[in-house]
Length: 307
Image (tube, rainbow, N blue to C red; front, side, top):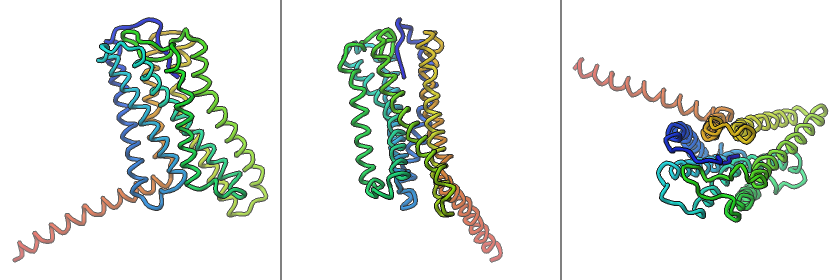
């Protein structure tokens, strides 16, 4: 969650913060683009529900990174635009990016609930069509819950500051904390706790094949929980700033989300077994081809010398 300072500050203070944030944003966007390309090219192995939802989270990450860079650009170079409405829309899209990532993890949790609990009775819930509908609903909800950013007058233009909800707007700040973080995370925790307990209960009497399936399910839950935890950890400076109002923490708060999403995207690739296997296979293919070409060149040269 992001809130703005009560007082404006010199833009010079933002240059280093913007540079550091830009570096990590570029890393996050690059890895997200890599995920899109790898999933798209690897048919049919990576054309699964899990990787569809992974791409949706990557899309939310790119959306968030772009809106953050737009905000930095306006603070550093766009002070000619003093419109309150423009400021509210920048905040609206930035908050939508933040909420988009969290809610993308929520529909991953809902998807796991469909597969783990309801798949035997309602097979259609595990189809691609259902998950496309889930993704559409997710983004509709995201743009709806962040609408108070433009529907209220709480956010307004102030020189040399980001367009966020001011800390003294207590009701709006509490709403952003609840709607963008607390509510979706609470639902995610409830769903995963239920799935985990249910799997543990039935595992003792399950067959060997069923136990392997449940083991994979628990491994997937662990991976998603790690990624969500990394993203949520990046929001700790925002909470500390709300409590302390220390300027240094505010500056860290401007960088930490970019660091969090870049680490989360890197771990997304590293924790996905199938992606890692495909990447290693591609790397082995490249290393095999290069020596073969070199040997061919040497053989041709040797023949010329012998002739």
